[in-house]
Length: 129
Image (spheres, helix red, strand yellow):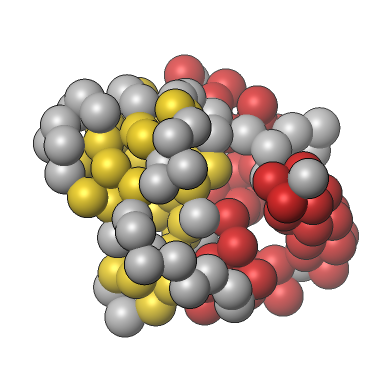
């Protein structure tokens, strides 16, 4: 499906087998945002990250993010204190991943956990320059 293709190109899952991407998908819930709506860093009682499936978002730093991009990846590692949230530039559909759910899925499969946390670390390092 198209959503699976977007996930396979996401920095957190790029290069993983389809089987591992589908396991990781189990940690996500689909959410939508209207144009100009703020995208929260905390939702469903936890820190969250989002993989954009459709639409675009703006970061507080002025970056425009679209399909397969990850908003707030630091949340999956327990970080993230920024006051200003990202916002949807147009109607946006994303997969929301709670930190606790992400950790639970990664703990259930050591191979998946190692691969995804390695990609998360690389993504965070690239963001920090």
